[in-house]
Image (cartoon, rainbow, N blue to C red; front, side, top):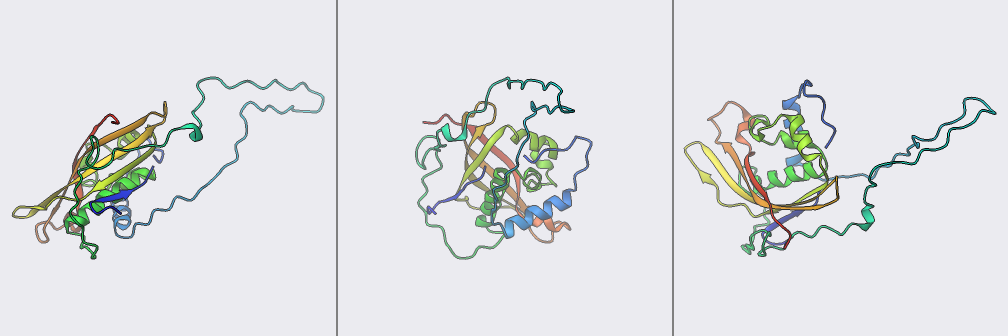
Length: 235
């Protein structure tokens, strides 16, 4: 792992209707568990499909309808797509080339590195299409994202794959009872519609309160407060 970059690879669960209720506490607990004990697993699964144009005769001797050729654009085979190639650190569109060594000693959850770990977990969950768990990592039970859980999931469902490189966190900005830290992020993915690669760069701000200020235990953990991630042309 480069000294200043936490490199992670990732890739929508289907959102329910807008009238469905979201168990925010359960989602938040699952997301927090992912932060503490994250080990990405993406088992390969396969499912046989039956052609929709295969029409079996209802009885022997009856004529069988001719297969109907599929219409519409065909998806681009994954094997023919050029691999995603995010810009390197220090180059246009890349993360800052910060060569400051990062301590490999265990870090505490309330440290700046703990905040970067939340960002790493957040983007790993997005890559695995675990959108509700990722949404729960936003402050105020997901509401700081500015979207409902369903709208949040829909906003990422346009990507066939979604990844991020997480940079070294900045210094913690300490107030009387508030803590904030900024973490640089480089996002790269691919759209479902046309397989076009997408490259983005920006920062994520995380927030927490010090113990004793809030009666809600979750408020003392790092949560995403804002994100400024903008598209950047490759090269």
